Image (cartoon, rainbow, N blue to C red; front, side, top):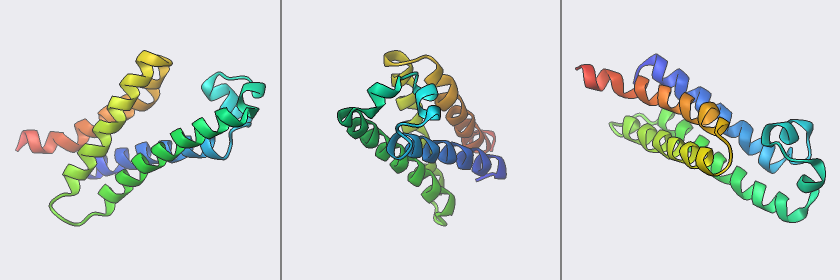
Length: 125
C-alpha cells in the first residue's frame, strides 16, 4: 500500500471518527447544528439523540475498519481497505440521494480519492 493511499485512508478514518463524535457526544453543539442543518430543539429530542448515536456508532465501525487496514500486516491489507472504503462510498452516495448532496462531496469524494490511490498501483503493474 502506497504512502499516499495510507495517508488518504487515515484522513477518511479521521473524518468518520469526527462524525462519530458529533453524532454520539456533540449532539447539541453548534458544530452539529451547522453540519447537519438541524435546529437545537430537534437535536435535544431524546429520540433524535438515539438515532444520531446509532449513526455515529456505524461511522465509528467504518473508521475502525480503515484503521485496521492500516495496521494489518498480511496480504489482506488492501482487501480490507477496499471493503471499508467502498462501504463509505456507498453510504455517501445513499446519503447524497436521501439527505443532502454535500454528503457525497464531503465523504464520498475523499473516499474515492483514497480508493484510486489504493488501486492505482495494482492497475499499473
